[in-house]
Amino acid sequence: MVNRSEEPVEIPPKDEEEIYLEKLVFGDHEGFSENLKKLDNLYDYSSDEDVKNDVEDVSESDNEDLEFVQDDDLFFIDEGESNDKEDDMDDEMEVDEEESEDDSEVAHDSDDAWEDSDDERLNISLTSSDKLKKLRKSQANSSINGKSYTTRLRSQFEKIYPRPEWIDEIEQEVDQSDDEMNIEEDSPLSANDNDTNAILKILSTSQKFIKTKQLKLISPTNISITRLKDANYQKVSRSAIQSISFHHNHPLLLTGGFDRTLRIYHIDGNVNQFVTSLHLRNSPISSCQFAPNAPGQSHEQQNLIFAGGRRRYMNKWDLNTGSVDKISRMYGAEKFQKSFEYFKISPRGTYIGLTGNSGWCNLLNGTTGQWIRGFKIEGTIIDFDFAKDESFIVITNTAGEIWEYDLNSSTANNKAKQKTYNKIIRRWHDDGGVGITKIKLGGPKNRWLAIGTNNGLVNIYDRTTFVDGTNPKPLKTVENLVTSISALTFSPDGQLLVISSRAKRDALRIVHLPTATVYANWPTSGSPLGKVTVTAFSPNNEILAIGNEGGKVTLWKLNHY
Image (cartoon, rainbow, N blue to C red; front, side, top):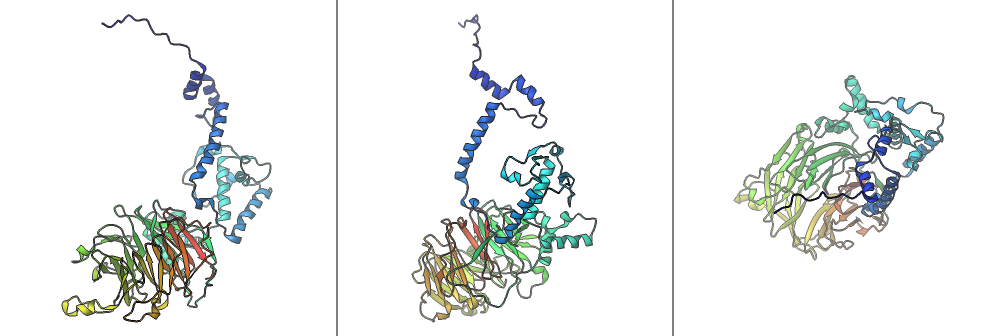
């Protein structure tokens, strides 16, 4: 039976530790009264002892955070003489005492998106750090309000990175056409995702790549290369970069990855303005490419982007209209094409090649996406490439067998003309080829052929030395990498070959042709490449773009051009 007449439990008085913890959680009357007097931080309360603990925690956390900083974030871009503007700006900030105009009264070119009334009441000290000291107008200028602080930061940024002239030209054209329209809203560079007008204005007004016919020879011993600002620093990918593509005529760069988003950037090496993007909700992107303008195409058939992933279809993005269509028309060849994740567009835009299953390589029409023909090889197809003049296609399997098919032969698909339909120009075996991963044609008249393997070896062949009926010998076998080759890229003029592997950090080398020598002076141990996933040259040979697993696309200028 329960005894309900128990004596009440006596609660002992609070000790010092309990009182201190209660004060930290709930505060006390004294602290509440003091905070009411502080209008700038009404909801903040801390004792002197708390501030001391916070400072110690911050100093300890700073040291711990350095362990997780990526190597490439610890480096800065040396842009040579152009960075002298920053030093001049620092001197002007400290010396210019004659400027009496209040920052808060400086007129802006456009209205702010929103204003915070608390900015006027904020009091920011300009002596707390070296970076803030650069914002002072004079030595006596020790503090400013929030609005002036924002204005000075904007002014400092604009002095280091001035506005490109081509933006002003576009805005002037907009003013002439409609004075009442806001410049920022109509500018193509302030476009929202999938703004068709934005990309069309860029294609019609931006400068084109300057392609010189005169060949500039590169030294075979040392390569001069300078890092530019990252191509996608304004909109970094949320996943590894799986594919990149330069536009064939305009300074635009396309990126794609497993975050299902296509992004386009205007490449000038300084600002690299983000232009527009397209999110494909149900399609992770393994391959994406600007389509070259095929011969005989009308204006409506130009400016196309193709993107594919591990799906039974690929997407065609028409930049003229903004429409996105799915391509899956295989017309009887569906069983040999279960995924559209890996494709290449021929140099003239006539064909889209796909690696299928059961040894099939399928060709689609470069404009409509309709299935045209297919080539069947023995074993498992691993890669293929088109000749520059689209006269033939080269296909390889994992065992190192190479097929070269004539693309100019009859396309009639019947038994009577089957031999001409699948005419084989040459069939041979890679020297020591086992575990082939990549194949690539390059150089004038398709002179060079590079074949990469899963053990890091790359065989480079000179096709002008090929003799029918015999297995050719490689000009050189590059052995500088030890992990699987994931990308092979020739420069447009055929003087350079970039080989890379995504299995190891900074696994990239540049080979000079025709000497087949590997440059030893770059990349260095300080080149922040990361795990390289894909590489691409600009059409004028001047810029090398390198995508990595961190979602960045670094740009490197070849100073020889």
